[in-house]
Image 1: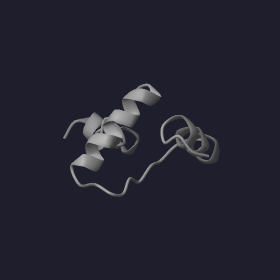
Image 2: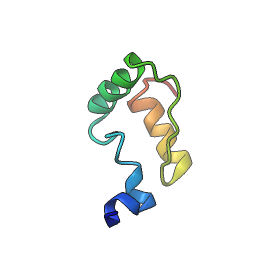
Image 3: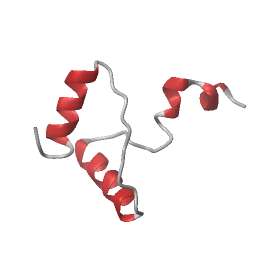
Image 4: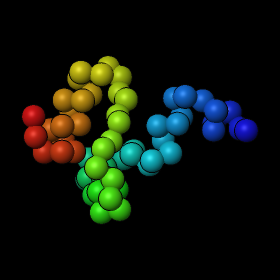
Length: 61
């Protein structure tokens, strides 16, 4: 197993939820179209980044 595959911090990159807010919206929509109805997100700092994700990606506060 490569270090990139083992590292906890890199596991969050596997779903490809990186990029601009528009790119993230598209990727979330792709997961939803595939039947996914729950995303577990880890961000740092948690509160600030979750707020930013809600506003910029999900379009709500």
